[in-house]
Length: 148
Image (tube, rainbow, N blue to C red; front, side, top):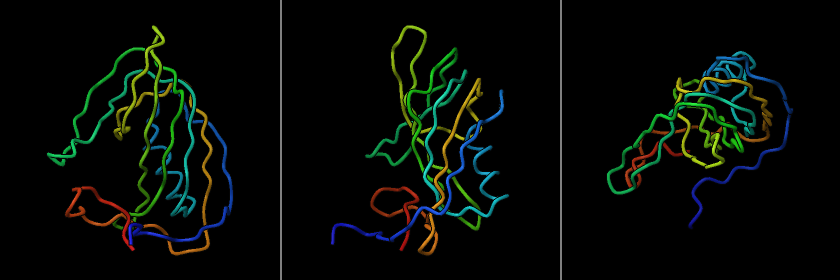
């Protein structure tokens, strides 16, 4: 079978809000999920930030390569999820950003690196199956993929 994880979820609740100026996106969302006992959710973001570290994953070497971006950026799209790892909510978010020259960059958002100017989020909480859990590193990819 080419699909390893298949679970059926239903939308349970949708939270919409803003992340405060100067705060980190992942820290804020993970804390919110822990405080509200959210274990599985889908995340959408838009807004603006300054100073952020993004990464891409080198498939051959199984390691992230990071790059720091300074200056002002619009969040054109932020998409990701919340799942569980070691009994805590963890976020996995990718962003596409536009700079002041209207050039775009994108990648995996690194926790603790994004200084929010203004950020609106929609968090779609899912229920109906056991929460999604991230396991230890997958042997083939080196990534902490969802386990079943």
